[in-house]
Length: 119
Image (tube, rainbow, N blue to C red; front, side, top):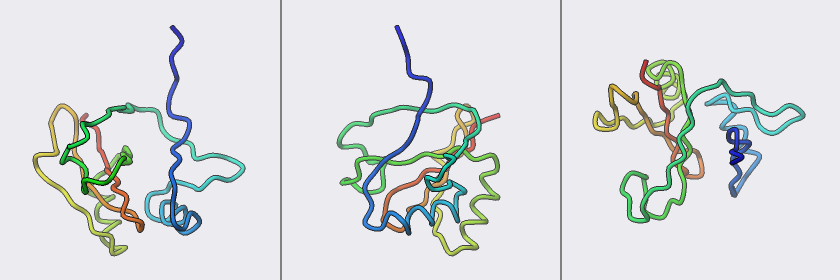
């Protein structure tokens, strides 16, 4: 069986695509689409549909949540907070086997999870 080799892109609607792309580039380092796409480091990618009634997402009407791997979660949290971005952490999100998590929302209210994998 042929299998996909990774995620080739994340596409979603935005009220202001240019401003939202700039926000992701400025605060998370995700470069907007240009001649050369954003290059990411190799690592685990989780693909996990959740039940319709999950309370894991921030709001019941949200259909997706981005999850980005980070190498230093405390440094990323400090960077975001210096920029005036509210960061949520919860002890129950963390797992010695899986890693540590934090959550932010982009300017359009989309949840963005930051994940520092274990080890």
